Length: 130
Image (cartoon, rainbow, N blue to C red):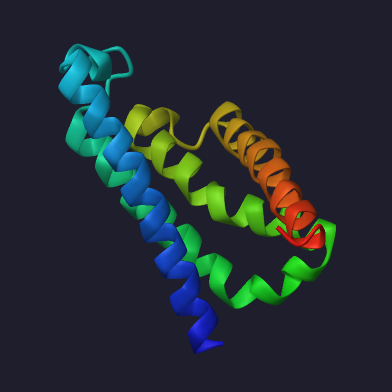
């Protein structure tokens, strides 16, 4: 279980690093204005990637045996991206709106769709031996 926990954390940090590199490229090419549109600074964006994917990776690790099944892989995808969506809402929404039903349902729905699709895709690729 400890090895799976470490694997999940490493996966989360790698994902956060890759997306942070992309965001850095966006900032270098488009400047600060690209982040002003979403009311998030460059630093907060990088922070939410590392916090969200770090927590998602830690949550994912112990559940890795579920990847044998399609639904298990879809659930793993949901668990992996849920903290990212939740962190985004926590950093972006006003304190009074963070736990509104709209934000909670949007976070759950976005995580279910994104994580479910990616989880199924990973499971399908593993079944094909890729």
